Image (cartoon, rainbow, N blue to C red):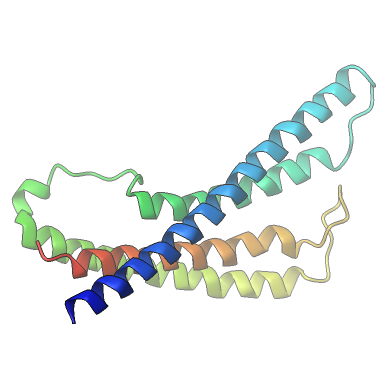
Length: 166
């Protein structure tokens, strides 16, 4: 029975790690894309005397995607900013209870992001971004996907914390 739980736990950890790596690569691609697009825009402005109309818009879209997906990465790594000066007052069990409340509230918030993101996608699916002509829903899909990704990472972290035997 114990080895079955370990196998399930290792499979879930492997899935979480694979999802993390995928998000990490998407964030890297977004950052590299931003660097190249802004470099091209600066080159166009100062060398060619012509700035592409789509450069700033696409760069901002990539930044929004990277920010929301990066938040999911920070959830798994526990690298979000937090205040820990009250931790000594709670003790280990109090911290565990506080963390469960934190996870549940954040999962609820991510559910709202996902739900409202779907609404934004629907509302903006027939409009276009003015500079690039891309559907506006591409920008707002980041809210939906980011909320979903953060919720998955929060569920993983909460399960990991609750399954620890310490």
